[in-house]
Structure formats: C-alpha cells, structure tokens
Length: 437
Image (cartoon, rainbow, N blue to C red; front, side, top):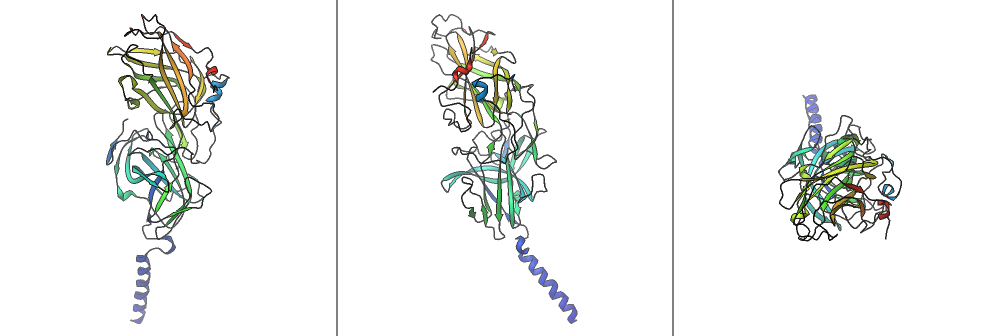
C-alpha cells in the first residue's frame, strides 16, 4: 500500500510540474507573439492587391549602351546579402497588407526546419518611441496558382506561439507560399515584394522580449512585455514604373487619358526560387509586360489618370513600349508605340521609381522620364549614387505630328484633332539630360 501511495505521489508531482509549464521552455503552448512592423521604406502600394479587413479579395534587360543614362540606372551585380533596414522617411502601410513571418532558432539558416511560421495582415498604424509602425494581426490567406494572395481572413487562433529561447525572424510581403526548400518564393511582375530579417530576438517564458532596435543597429536591444516583437522595415525587392499625362490647359486638350500600357523586353517571369533574404536576380528579358487593370490609378482631374505597377528588376538593355490613350470623349483609342528595342538602354533597380510622363510639345507628344526613390518622388537624395537629383528629367523621345492644325508650335490650338502617329524619334542624346544641376 505504501508503495502504491509513493508511486501515486510521484505521478502527481510530475503532473503538477507539467500543469505549471515546461520549465525553462516556457508555458506549455508557448508565448503568443504580438508582431508590429517598422513602417520605414514600405509604402501603401505594398499589398495593394489585397483589400478589406475581415475578408479581402485581390484587385487584382536592353543592348548595352554607354553614357550617363545607362550608368544612372545600371543594375549592380546581384548578391545574396542579408536584408538591412532602409533609412527612408516613415510612410503609411495600407491596411490589408499581408505578411508571412518565419521564425527560426537563432543561427539556423533559412531552409532549416522552422520553429514556427504564420501569416499576418496590417490592421492599422501606431506611433511609438518617436516613429510609426504598423500593427499586425494573425490571419489565413488564400493563394492562387502563382502564389499571389487572392484573399485573407482574420483568424486570432493562428497567432505564432514560441517557447522561451532566441529566434531569427524572416518577414516578407505579400504572404507568398514558401517553396519546398523552405527559403524561397516565386515573384512575378505586379507583385510589390518586400522582405526583412530581424535576428537575435529573445523570448522569455513570462512573455517578455528583447529585440534589436529597428532604427539603430548600434543601440541596445529594446524590451517589451506581452510577447511584443517589432520587426525591421521591409526592404523592397522590385522597381516601380508609372505612366501619366502632364496636365495642360483646356485650349490644348480637354482630356487625354492613358487606358493601357505595355513594356517589351522586360525580365522573364517569374523570378523563380528567389531567396527571401536576398535580392531578386534578373534573368532573361524577353517578356512583354501588360500593366494589369489594378494598376489604373485615378487622379484629381480627368487628365491625371495614370498607370502604376511594381515590376521585376531588369538588366540593362534597350526596350520598347506601347501606350493606348483616349482623347477627350472620343471612344476610339489611339496607340503610341515604339519598336521593341527603340528606347535607349537602361535597367530597372529595386526600390527605385521610374516615372514616365506624356507631355504636349507643339504637335508632338514627348516621353519624359524622372527617376527617384520609390516613396519620395522628386525628393531623391541619391544615396546609391545613380545620379538623379530633384527636378531632373530625361527626354526619352517623342511621337511627332500627333495633333493636326497646330501651327503655333506650343499646342495651344483650341481642341486640335488627335491622330495616330507611328513616327517615334528617340532623343538625340538623352544622356545630356542627366547630371545637370
């Protein structure tokens, strides 16, 4: 009898220990991690393909040329570098932006068995410690055959839980599915892919945490309670290309609206097996990219509608484009086009905005290019040495004789007739427009 009581007491003792937790490993089910995300370089266009809060449905290279134009946009040699936070001004992150977060035990390489993985979406923005950050909530996501997020739904039960220990977090947006290697994804044109790594995060069994300051790598670790972890800002891995019309007075035209855009000799898609901790490596450049309908952006006036879309980075090469426009209320579209390799060689670089504008010049339509930081159009500080300064524009070329009955040379005839023209001429020396003060 005494022997049975001893066995029962011993069993009760172990059961009691188990009910209280798992010793240094923390609570039985782990600590629920409350993620937030430094806003940093990420703009509202990331995740713009997702909409809604509870359930969101998707909106849905060039021959080498020397000179300053090629130099300004030259693609640096690809390298698999750890993602570092960018030092940009804080900007809002759109509600509904989806993020996949992978937790690894500290020091484990991507591709190792993760400690946990979960998907989140942005629910809002808060200001803490003098900077803005997005708040994240757990969710489930639906991906299509390409991996694009087509929908998400709020799901508090999907919050990541971790035992006490030290972890490295890899976050990327949109919440694409990881490939079977556990470290890479497929990225397509029109995906605003961005990623970051937050390493050396300590999670304690009482729910307190310590993590690197996302704004200052040299500062002491920040601490928090309730499982709170602030992730480093997501760094963009694609470029942004936009097309718009420069506003003119009603004496020139009432309305000139871009209705579609195609770019030829773009990077082949997808950028397959892109490691989430490295830059996208451009492949071939035989793809013609048609801007999706979701890229159509309304402006403040009828003639300010534009197209804007992320694109995969591309190697330096000539390229071509086709722009379809509608003039005034005429339902018949007019197409302005170049040959597939008629525009001088340039590259598209990650995190950079390439803004093309149609400008009326007499009877001609000029194509103007401005290069800037993705978030700060017109306020580029040139930290990467690409040579573009605020206010600098590049005349790429022009379509001649697009408007009839314009003898003034300034496009000021009342409602001139818009005609189709294939007479494209590239700028005699577009490099002359770069590097000027």
